[in-house]
Structure formats: structure tokens, C-alpha cells
Amino acid sequence: MPSIVTGIIQDLNRTLIDAASIEARVAEMAEEIERDCAGEVLTVVALMDGSLFFVADLLRKIDLPIRLITLSASSYHGGTSSSGSLRVAWPEGMDLKGQTVLLLDDILDTGLTLSEIRLHLEAQGPRWLRCGVLLSKKRERAREVVAEYVGFEIEDEFVVGYGMDFDGRFRNLPCIGVLKLDA
Ligand code: 5GP
Ligand code: MG
Image (tube, rainbow, N blue to C red; front, side, top):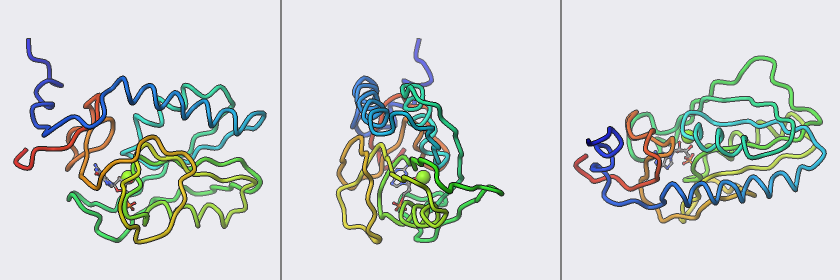
């Protein structure tokens, strides 16, 4: 019986990272973060929606007290390349002063999103602030930005799955793949 996921996988040109490799790498990242933040309460600022599955899997593997703040940020507005303008919905009353903060996103691409949000968070005076991304594209950045935790370095291709979409689709793929151009 063909499942829904089998149907979506047919739209992929190829699988880039399979589900087992994602799980193993996310577990390693969790261990590293847990070690670096031992004894602290961690405030996680997660950029939705692309990082949803990554954040859910990662945080469940970190054995520390965690506060989660989600932000909606989008720079793609439906296409397959960054529009260059970022929309962020900042929650009211966010105060990170003196906190141990981990900013999480799905992909580091042009760097626009993380650099802008990182600056905004830094301005609030956290005690400690680091960024983690599941994927980092090997490409020139429009803005210099550091991600201290990187799951995988990938080529500069448009990817979907494991939370990442094309026009609202493909988020529920368990693996990460490259789309067929006609899909
Ligand atoms: P940046 O601001 O670094 O250019 O872009 C980061 C954001 O663009 C990520 O949070 C992600 O939502 C989106 N993005 C970048 N590359 C891709 C991609 O290959 N696939 C998908 N689905 N989103 C991407
Ligand atoms: Mg995003």
C-alpha cells in the first residue's frame, strides 16, 4: 500500500540525508550543547516553521531545564531563493538579559536571517549566546554570521523535508532531499 510519504518521496530528485543520519547527528549536537551548558537553564529561541522538527528532536535529547521561545521569521515568501527582506514576529515582553540563550534555525543560507536575529538578541544582554543550525550551505554569505553548532554542511541547493518546505509542502518528509525541478 503506497503511503503518503512514499508519494512525496517520488517528488524528490534525490535523498541528501536519510532519517537515521539526521537522528544520529542531532543526538551528537544535543550532547555537545548539554555539555557546553551544563548547570544552566537554557533559553532556546527557535525560528519557525522550518526548524520545527529539528528543534523538537534536539530539545528532547537535551537533559537540561529549557525555556522555549518560538519566532516566526521568513525571507523566502514562497520561492526557492531568499527575497533579501526578513519578516520577524517578535513576541511582546521578551527579555533575555543574563540568560543562557541558544538560537536555532533550520538552514544557514545567505546569513541574513541569523545575523539580524542574533544582533537583536545580543542587544538584550544575554550572559551567553550561541547559534545552532541543522544545515549550513557552502556559499558566500550576504552577512557574516557564526553558527557554533552545525549539523551538516551541504552544497548550495534547495532542500526540503524534516520541517523544510517548498511553498508549504514537503515538511513531513522524514529525510532531507533535493526536489525534482518539475515537482
Ligand atoms: P538566510 O537568511 O540565511 O538566507 O536564509 C535562511 C532561511 O531561508 C532559513 O531559515 C530557511 O527557512 C530558508 N532556506 C534557506 N535555504 C533553504 C532551502 O534550501 N530550503 C528551504 N526549504 N528553505 C531554505
Ligand atoms: Mg527559516
